[in-house]
Image: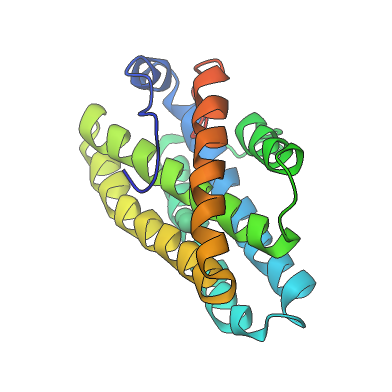
Length: 192
Ligand SMILES: [Fe+2]
Ligand SMILES: [Fe+2]
């Protein structure tokens, strides 16, 4: 799905179902980080790539709205937002991209973002299909569509600017992503 080479381990849903408060708290932070990352890209690359400013500013607003929706599900369940944890998946993916040869920083930033959106989309589908709480399954089904759109946005921005280099690099980074996703221990987090 969406360029992912390895599906999520089917045992992940069990780890999540055992700790829904943990999943929701982690998910809330993922949405905040997605908004922050979009804005930091606007700040860092908006000068050299002004075509990013409008779509990524819009994306930051949308991810912020997602954060608010997750936090409402948390409030309804009495779950509080803890401090953000380090996201080992995102850290390992960025590190693998850096270790994997020379590519322009902007290209890798766009493509790593695309793959994170793709993996999130895939995980949300697993949640929509596998959880029993109906308000959460409907919620995750809606978010799945948004993450698929965000994957397409980041890939499209990369291809518009870098052409065939973007397609080659995405194929390469998708291999790294599959290794990273496969190597991480299963846990009650969006990317765990
Ligand atoms: Fe989101
Ligand atoms: Fe997203």
